[in-house]
Image (cartoon, rainbow, N blue to C red; front, side):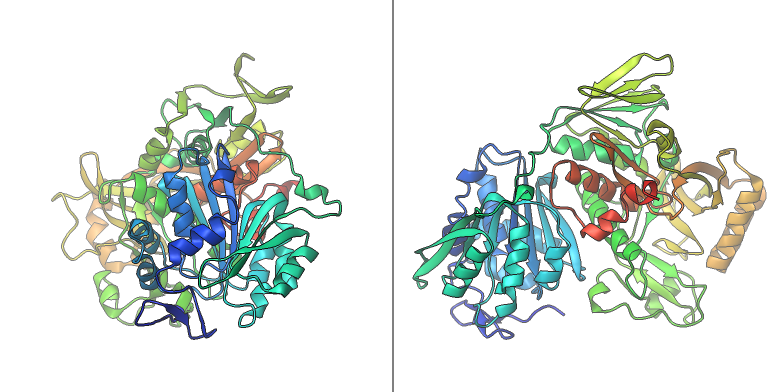
Length: 612
C-alpha cells in the first residue's frame, strides 16, 4: 500500500507516519534548487562530464529528482548520462507525485513521465529510464542501510533528504552516513536542508568537510560540503572510466544488439560482426516470443532478476516498437497445472505484476473456473527481430554480416579480432562477445555453455484473425500459446517450445510437432482440439532455433578481462534478459550504478563459473 500523505489546505504535504512535512507549501522546486542543486554546485559541477552520479537518501515526493532532471534538460553542457540513485522506505502513490509537482508547471510533464513508470515497486532496486535512456533513476525501496550495502559505485553528488533527524533518526544515523561515505569519491559534494549539529558532527566523522550556509525561508540554515577525509582512502581515488572510442560486438542477435545500443548511448562507435547473412538470424529469428515474469512465493533471485529485466525491456519496447505490430503488451495467463492448490498469494507489492486470475480471465482463456492460474499484467508477446533492428539502427552502430570472427587476441591498444584466414577484422579497446554457444571458443574456453534445441509450431489463421472464442492474450504454463500475432502473409498462432539439451541440430522434426501438440492439449484442451486439423494436415509449420544456456541456467553478463566482455546464455528468456545483461555489462565498464543490487548482478557475472 502506498504511503499516506496528508495535504493541507495551503498545499503543504505532511507525513502522518513521521508527523513532519515533506516540504513547505509551494517551495518544492525552490528548495531543490537552493538547497540540493546549489549545495552541490550544480549544474556547474557537471559541465562537460561524460556522466554524473547522484545519490539521495529519501526520495519522498520526488521533487529533487524532477528538479535535477529539469536542470539537466536546460543545460547545454549537461553530461551525456545522468544517473540518479535514490532510496525510499515508504514510497507514496503516483497521484501524490503529480500533486506535489503541480505547483511548478515546468515539472509537471516530468512528473507525468515518472508516474507512468511508478508501479510494481517491490523491495529492492528498480531502474526507471527517461530521455531515451540518458536519464536513469535507480530507485531503492526499503531500509536505507540495507540498500546502501547493496550498492557499488562512486557518487559525484549526495543529497541527504529526509524527515527531521529528531523524527526519523535512523535515516540520519552514523552507520547510514558511513555507508554513504563509502560510496563517495574524494571531492564528492554533499548537501542537505538540515543544519542539526549532530548531523554535521557525524558527517565530519565520516570524512566530510561541511559548513552551515543560509537556508531557504522559513529554514534559517542548511548544510553543504564535500568528501575529503584526512586519512588515506585509496579506494576513493578510482581511475576514471574509459573514454568512449571504438568498440566491437560479436553477434547481431538480441544480446549483441542490446549491448551495441547501450555502448552507443554512452558515446562509443560500435561495429557489430555476425557470421549470418542478416541480423537476428539465430535464436533471435523466432517469429514472436513471450516475455512474462517468473514469480515465486519466496521471491527468489531469479524472480527479482526477471522482473528487473522485463521492466527494462518493456521500456525499450514502449520507446521503439509499434503496439499490435511488433509487440502485444496486453498481459498473459499462466496456468499452474503442476499444482492442484490455488496459487499462493505473492504479496501486495507484486500485484501490479502478478495476481490470481479472475474467473473472467480463466473463461477468456478457455479454462474452467476450478483451474488455477496467475494473471501477469507485465507480460507481452514480442518480435525479437523488431527489437534487434531498432537497437542496431541506433546512432553510432554499424553492422557487418557474413563475417565470422575466429579468434580474439590482446594487443597493446586493446583487442584484435581475426577472421577465418587470419586476417585482421578490427582492433578495438572494448570487445563484447555475444555469440551464443560460440562465445566460449572466442573467450579462451574459460566458460562452458550448452546448446538447447527448441522447436515452435505455428500456422496462419484461415480467416485473417483468431476465432472469436480464442483467448485474446497469450497462455502459458506447460509450454506457451500465442493466439494472434501479425506475420508476413497474415496473422499467426504459435505453440511451443520443445527443450532438447545438448542438441544443436536445427532440422525440423515431426516428433517435436507432435510434442508441441501434446503440450497444448495439457495447456488448453479446447485450443488443442481447434488446431488438431492443422497438425493432421501438415498446415502447422515448424520453426527451430538453438538456444544457449549455462549449467545453472542463468545468463552470463560481465567482463572476462579488461576490455573483453560477454553477454550470452540468455536461454529461452532472451527478451527478458538482453537489456538487463547489456546494462549490467556497460555499467560496470563505466563505473555507473548497477540496475540491480550487487548480489543479483554477481549472480550473472561469468566469474561465478570461471572461479570454480
